Image 1 (spheres, rainbow, N blue to C red):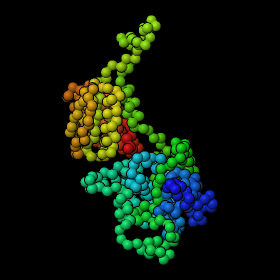
Image 2: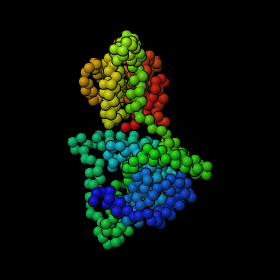
Image 3: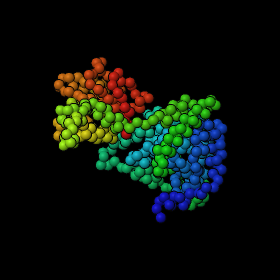
Image 4: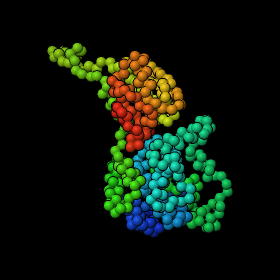
Length: 423
């Protein structure tokens, strides 16, 4: 029997919702209508294979043994917590990220909102002022970078191993049921409560209608926010969260390629006739794409752009180079000054070196180097967190700022186009 079948077999059927969860959902509808309206959209299912609670965009699962260890106020807070996972789109956006670290990042993103709404969370809830106001993707990048900085890569354990190790240390305390290792209210066969500060798991939505489900939830979040605001029961941070959750997501890779292609001069010309119709006696123009100038990419090397983002950006640099075939590919690294320049000619097989730098941030020097080195940019793309001094002079070539900070919080560039890069 596979895992999914085991989980389904351990879940309660379509019977009544657990009375304690049903009671706290009702309390949310009355006192916190934003959370309450969205909580009613989730099916509730008992799942003894779970450690605590979980949500996947469609179902709210819970372990009854863990539920019995919580107070009524904590149950209400956990339900609101799980609702925010879906409202923030965490069930749709995990991608290839490590599930445990992604779960922690999502918890850090939403727990302050639940607490600021006046609710109670179980002891050990993940809260850190450094992450308040940041998205789950930004926090995930910070957690990943912090883990790399703490230990050499060869000795760095997998996040899941860290949790297994922390859960295996020490001797379990006997529960009220008389069975060793059980928390109060747990039954034999129930999984133990989480010991690492996480009391709910966010799982990726597995249904074939993911885009539809995601859109439905965005609409529901907007409607719930409006309804709660009309009743005067929508705190400011929830209003901001609802606006952020409903904001359309733009694929920065598509924007990057579109920006680069727009800088490639293409037109129909008789200079190179369309050979396809010459044998029929038709002398027709062909699409002529002359060689574009230099494709210039600048990487912020101040340390504010994390390794994973740099690696994905490097992959897109190479993709643009191979698809557009510019005269040259120029890759610069810059903190306050240009720290490294790599130039590749058309036909090369570029191997981009790691970022070099680590100081503060200022954006002017790469633009000065373009002039000083006699480069001929068809365009320039700058990957940065947007925290730095911008050039005083507007360049004559197109510029795309690839911002690793949410556009709602990023500094506005005085020229060029800006796209949000959240990896």
